[in-house]
Structures are given as structure tokens and as C-alpha cells.
Image (cartoon, rainbow, N blue to C red; front, side):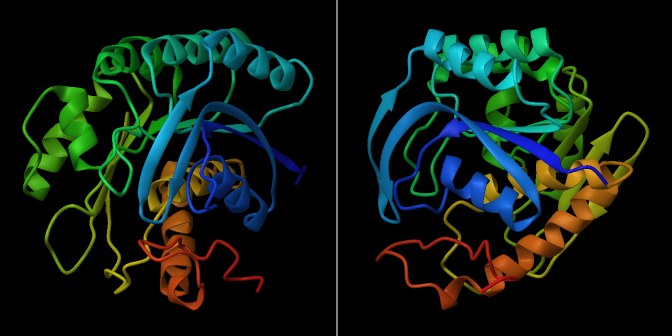
Length: 266
């Protein structure tokens, strides 16, 4: 198989557990060459977000032009977009370059609860970006915000919301059920042709910083190696479960630590 070139479009994390840094680690751990476009400089650590410095949308677009006009990009992960005008700049450039296998992690809140997407940007996300992506990976609060609906409290409500998100124009939806208070952590994958349930036992660790970023980056890195999203999701969840299981072996920060991206290597 040819070497996979992957692009991440996201904000930063100086502590290395989330955002651009987590995405590049994930790409490397899974055998993909990582490239990146930064949308925001985020002063954050394992305890929370201290400050956000947004990048001007024109410069975000210039970064995208630099990468996409030169490097063959096989797969893309989108994370923090911060503002509506950045959402629109990213949507326009991805459509222009016809970027394949775009995974959108609908980042709205940090693990600490700090906001990472302006409320005014949600509508731009729905209208401008969703039609250009192959897969979105909302957790339950993010799905509720996208649909302007109550937070799902059951798997039945998860399924209903997943179908509603699919109708907005993206090719596939992975509804993440980590916010349900069950022994398992169920996820539901919706495509144009199928609906599939995935489960994994909850890993008993507090160190889950960057889990959403890491999963979406893993999905992007693995998609070119698999026939469809179902196989990709299964492989990504196995890898992430191992990264969570080894998270306590790291010694990073005094708050919610990161998962162990290089658990297969160190």
C-alpha cells in the first residue's frame, strides 16, 4: 500500500494530549504521515483552558493552500474551528481541493468544559461544512447542539439523533455514547446503507484528555486501509481502548491526563 498522507485542521494543546499535537501523534502511531493546519493557539493543560488566540481565517486558508496545493492528502481530520468565519474558510478550501475522507470531530467543549466553538458558529458548521465531510463524530451534547434538541438520554434517542444528523448531508455519522451512564460505552454508526452498534467496556481511568481528538484522528488515519467506515470504526476503537488502558502509565500533569498514543511502541 502507498504511504498515507494525513492532514489535521485544529487548535493546539501545549500539554500534548489533545488538538494538533494529539492528532499528529495518532497519525504517526498508526503509520500515516501527518501534516497540519492550525486554527487557534490554545493555552491549555490537563487542568483546563486558560486562553484562546484565534488565527485569522485568511491565514487558515493560506495554510490550507500551502498543504493542499503541494501534498497529496489521502485523509483529513478536522477538530477545533473556533469561529464561523474559520468554519467557512475551511469548508471553501476543502470543497475547492476535493479533499477525500474528511472526518469532522464537532469540537465544542474541552474535557474541562471550556468552550472551543462560538455558539454563532454552529449554524455555519451545519450549513457550510457538513455537506463536505465523510464522517462526523459528535458526542451526545454536541449532537444535541447541532440539532438544537435535548441531550439524548438513551440509545433509542441516540439512534433518532444520528438519523437526523445524517439527513443534514454528511456521508456518515458516528454517535459517541460515552455520556450515557452504562457499564458499556456504546457508539452507533449511521451510513446511507446501514446502521451498526459498537460497544467497548469502560476503561477505569481518569486520564481521558484528548480522547475525542484521538479517536477522530485514528478514524482518519485508518480509513484508507479499510473498505468502509464500519471496519475503520472497529479498528480505531480497539486501538483507542488500548491507549486508554495504558494512560495511567504516563505521568503528565496534575489534572485529567492524556491517553497513551504510543502504547504499541514504548
